[in-house]
Length: 323
Ligand code: PCA
Image (cartoon, rainbow, N blue to C red):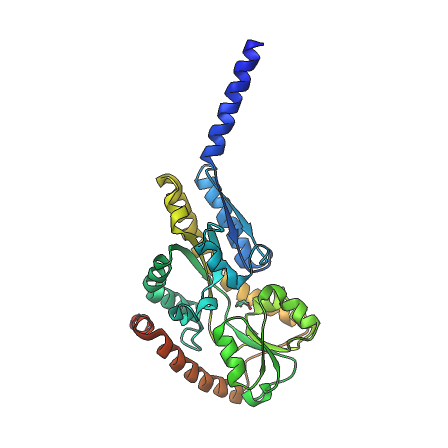
């Protein structure tokens, strides 16, 4: 009897120590569990668990199941969750310099996107830190092209289309081209297509594939307008509560996730386009007039962004151009 009690007490102490030693975090994310960003996040969470010897356990919530994309930053900022994934440019209205990767045609290849990231990383980190958050890593979406329910030869053909936006710049494009703007997050895009709420938008082949876009639209113009990034970040308070070894585990897993994520994105750019073709879509370069019109639109948008982003934006672009 006595021995049994001692065993029970010992078991309880052990359980209590394990409980104390394990930190559990929630990480809301915006895109389908099958998307490469979400798969990379899960691999990241697995690495963190392994490298921290089980001390930090991050639950990834993909598909906007915990918070919608535009709510994720606030959720981390207010301590409702410890970490999150967010499309950087989604919060451009609040922090204009976060829109640097949706300035049209500023960086249209993976190499240039990486340079742009390196040039803007210090200011991105600074802005996040000022709000009590720490950047862990970023991963770009594949180059953005134009989807439509009909052939497009010039930008004028887009007038009146029901144009889906996912950030301030895409909303502004809807306005400038005389389309009907509809704000829809990726998680609701398939349904918006099925109900004919939208019939045109700018996004990657990846999100097109996730939404089975070929069931509604037939054209994808691979205009390579920009490569917008998702960023993964953490509440600085939550980070500081970790012991040094666990902090290192988190940062090492972040660095690995960044390298892996950029590689996954490159592979996805090709795979997803092939999937659109397989779905029966016409995938083509934009016809010359459409391309020229978008270049011109891009100049307007660049000027607008530079004005908004001020000295921070100018400095980051200047650093990028020197690379
Ligand atoms: N997919 C996301 C953001 C950019 C992309 O390629 C979306 O369409 O919402």
